[in-house]
Length: 500
Image (cartoon, rainbow, N blue to C red; front, side, top):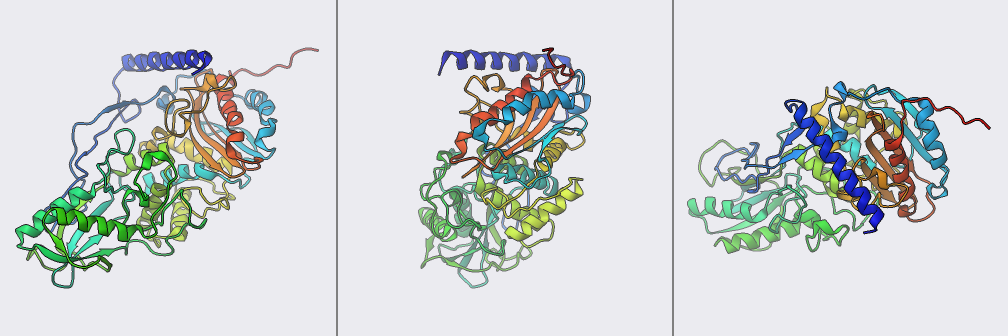
């Protein structure tokens, strides 16, 4: 690492530590604004009570304490100095937007996150291509529409036909056939081996050692194929899948080959795991529907639940999706939002549900036109003003349930998709200070998030460059410089032109 970056990052780290210590000394931490308590259930939330409905919260183990960076201090009691001025923001951004690497059609919105007052806009209401900043609105809609203790549950129930069990997909793409350690941080996915172990125990207790296996994908409707077609950035969107449909299951390594039928593979993996537990599966697992869950009765009665495993709660699911920019998780959330709002669990139903949720939150949607929840579709259109409105909502102390949208955003130079950015002279000063969601498609590079300016004022910003010439990485340094300029701006001081 160049010496200049090392020094800048060291200074940024020192600044964060000093700010955290100051906040700690200021008084009790509460409401999730200064300390977020995280409890990771490393067991995958296994349930094995026969007849349980699978809707419980699962167990929790002692978790880690995560300190929220200073940029996320409660904005309702913001101790900052003067509010930013339009002229102050314009003076620092206009020259940087002339950078040719941006392609000349960057749509911009900057707002005061304390008041929601727009400060600067260039095409702020234009429907620009958002790429993965789409995940911001998906996250906010999910956190608003879904209960905070909701977990995505994969179940095994007795089938309608004697001697048959059904593996029921609950829309959790992070269900893993591996050991569960492939995700960074504290995210602990539900594990298929634990589901098999609990299922086998219930079957043995009922005297069953041989059976047939079916799998149920009825939770979702519509096409499973993303509108962009087969692509290594996303699997078929189905309720039952393991390791996001990846051939090798290596989640942390970015795009990878996807299996042709994620559900069939998951069922085959489950059958193999049952065999290791002494339960023989006869024949090849086949698609089928589970019978309705019945009242507790005979252990082998149709619909009796044998076992279930659960994902982490929705807020942790959202954080993981945001930090890693995980497309499969985003599309799963889109469908669960649709279910919660009574819409078809499809791309179209999810988009309708997101619009309904955002409208209910008071967001002016304008030219918003989405085809997915991940932002992979380059036909998506979103005004940057929609992003800054949504980010401001997530930063509001009145909406603490939306906070994981922000805590999941990568930190410049340190985490997620911003780990290897903010590393040149134009953006080094922003390392550790900017928290933002990235977006990248061919000819599109985007960045949207939060930063505190030099006066300590919290600003929400969205930069959507959808006319980039060539690969999106060409424009990334310029976008990083824009966010860094906001961090260094004394935007509350009116700008006076120099004489001469």
